[in-house]
Amino acid sequence: MDVVDFVNNGVILTNLDAKSKEDVFKALHEELYKKENVKESFYGGLVKRENEFPTGLALSNYNVAIPHTDAEHVINSCIAVATLKNPVVFQCMEDESKSIEVSVVFMLAMGDAHSHIEMLQKLVSLIQNDSFLENVINAKDKNEIIQYIIQNEKLYTA
Image 1 (cartoon, rainbow, N blue to C red):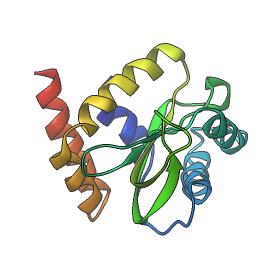
Image 2: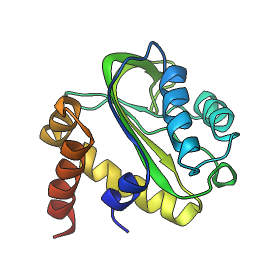
Image 3: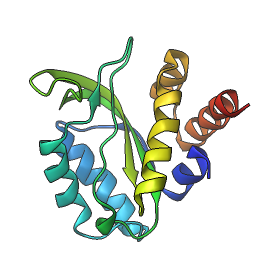
């Protein structure tokens, strides 16, 4: 499956007004839980894993976070996307003593380890493209983000 398929199964929140990464986790968890994609335990799993293994990525122009947790908290594999009204602080994946301000979050909810690794690789290919990230961050709604993912995913699978 492609990234866009998992995003379509998940949720997209644009211009989310969050004060912390926990606010982002709560908002995305609530929406995924309503869609019966994740268990109630998903939020706690996210927070625990994020504290142990930070997911903030400092990229050239925009910083991204790719939080995730164990498969035991997932019912249906999907990806949740949140663009943030104002950046929130995440710890850097490469150096957890560093804090970075993140503008977009791609939250993975994967039911098995193989698909988790594959989606992570595909997402990393997408987010390394600054124009893709800029378009996603500036998107007004879910449909725009889906279109940017479709357009850019074709570039990496062609």
